[in-house]
Length: 266
Ligand SMILES: Cc1cc2nc3c(=O)[nH]c(=O)nc-3n(C[C@H](O)[C@H](O)[C@H](O)COP(=O)(O)O)c2cc1C
Ligand code: SF4
Ligand code: SF4
Image (tube, rainbow, N blue to C red; front, top):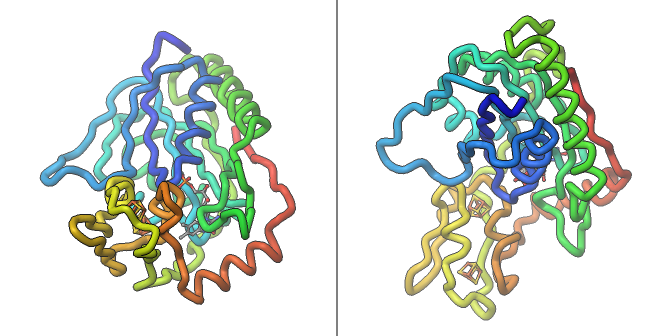
């Protein structure tokens, strides 16, 4: 495996997808993959990224059982030339529904040949001390499973001589995909008493929804509720108070506390 390049492509606002992919890459024998990180807004005028050799490992989180729209927009700026791809979705212990199938379709559209897939579990973006849904995941057990999956992918690719001769990848999911139910116009707010205007929330926001200057402004219309700003705020000033989000969190705490385990498709 080491004579080939691995390109790790991810969208990962709160970092669980990226950590999972890095463990898979390690299992495949790549400790230093080339990173194409789609998490932050692309620089103005950024063009197409071409991947024309090696193997790709592509990962996104699951939002409402689908691939996040922001990730789709950015994945559409990647073009590959029949490169084998390992596709991975990371979900918050509820369900991944149509996301892996959608990622498979997107990867084929971009010119990849999906050869293996997986659904791993990451701490739910909406989780916190009060609502510990999959708190701390991927944990060591998940990362070991990710490395093992990476090894199995390596064996599969080796046995097919890095050609695309492997049988077509079958992953679960429905067509048409489930309807997206965006929580439009809702965003975290900053508690003035705790906010030091440090700017961390602006620097981690995938959609440029936050501006920090002499005061902090959030453009709720751009917010995808990824919770990166909430989780990375060093003072706990960034919180989500909107009732629809609280209702989702209550449902998660009621229904999604039993530990789910990773599923792999080879
Ligand atoms: C808007 C939104 C919708 C989500 N929908 C789902 C879902 O349908 N099922 C699920 O299990 N987790 C869901 N999650 C949780 C994320 O998939 C999960 O926390 C993932 O680990 C986040 O990945 P990241 O750390 O790479 O950002 C959702 C998270 C967000 C922000
Ligand atoms: S990260 Fe927290 S403390 Fe820093 S500017 Fe944002 S809300 Fe304020
Ligand atoms: S403002 Fe919205 S999109 Fe930006 S980091 Fe916070 S939750 Fe994510």
